[in-house]
Image (cartoon, rainbow, N blue to C red):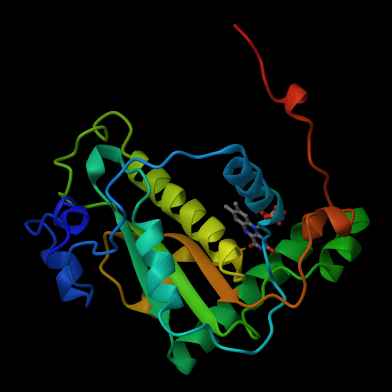
Length: 246
Ligand SMILES: Cc1cc2nc3c(=O)[nH]c(=O)nc-3n(C[C@H](O)[C@H](O)[C@H](O)COP(=O)(O)O)c2cc1C
């Protein structure tokens, strides 16, 4: 076995019975690197910046399914994210079954209708014109949840701020989002959902809290400007208005 693989510790197996029961193996990460610390140069930094700029929330997909092994690779990259106490509370549910997908689409339609009704008349027309999910077109549905009861990490860092488990999962989601874009895959976050209904639809353990539901697929088009900005719904703020010094 190459050194680089051996140096990656195995996932701790105790405390993962709940994960194994749900059908997710507690196996080691296996992707090897050279084992040498890389030296990132200006060219790499420029390309990385491009990746950040060209990552988009994608809601319009081409019908092709994801290339073989791609989703596994993205999930593996997500699992490299930081997590409080190395608790790795992320849980991934790949939603393939048509009935479950249909229930999620119903859930979204209901919540989106309610959201539309909640907007003041001067906003509701603009809201109705937005496309806020690609659930019907996307070849891949992925729910990402936080196991708030995990004992992995022995509770380190979560005593005063238990929400850190959720934030760790968001860190993993950002990894996945960027890694997807680097592979030419678009990802869209769907939060216009009743989370309790989603976890019921997915039939997951009660300690798993929904963090996000995602559509993945090859995008119809690429853009370096967010869709909500192009639709004139909202605009990016300048960083100077977001930083204070004390
Ligand atoms: C926590 C979170 C929830 C989101 N929920 C939705 C959603 O339900 N529907 C949607 O169209 N976009 C959703 N988005 C995407 C945002 O609208 C998008 O990130 C933002 O407009 C900036 O666009 P960009 O991601 O292309 O840069 C969500 C993004 C985040 C981070």
